[in-house]
Image (cartoon, rainbow, N blue to C red; front, top):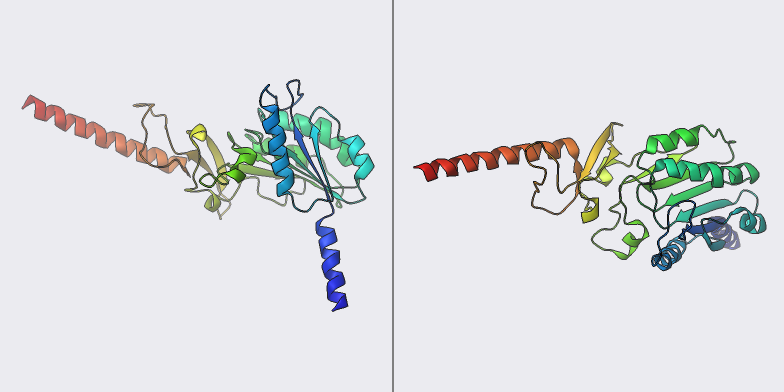
Length: 268
């Protein structure tokens, strides 16, 4: 019984051996772009992110303009994992790579720790393959790694935790220096999942069980040569782009045929 209790305590301690940091931007942010009047919401989102990370020995919210090194130098233990979240605005995978190169890569070299970065902002992984190429090129020691996660499109970010209808609507992608994870999420986890109005018409990739990458679209306004405002009447969902385009084409043909028949009836 005592042995079981000791093992349980040991498991809990290992599970909690993380340093968790959430970053947010101010108006002069070097990354992520902050807007006056929104900074309070970023901090609130960070508080929500910290709360969702249940296994943290240390927790801290830090302005993205501030170096993480002084804090990590003070609290980080050898081989302890560092988990970093970001709440705010973002522009692209290019910006994400710049951030990783300037802010995270030096920490990877300095500390004997692995890093996990969750960027909850929009489009931080709009080109996941580029991010994965950068991570693979780091060639880290076997005892540590870096894993990143972000959205391929406009995102709900941390606020999905407060939503019921749109939980996990963001089409995320992963990158890992070990190359152990799929860059794109599994299609079966996203196909027919609800997406939001501001993701309408946006596209991203998923991976089938057979390893084939397929393009998804948030089902809403779909641009076609005949009608750029055609809208199928149903809840917006992540659907396969090729199949959706075929449905639109069939609907256009059907509508055009109905119009021709109506015109014929009017002439008669």
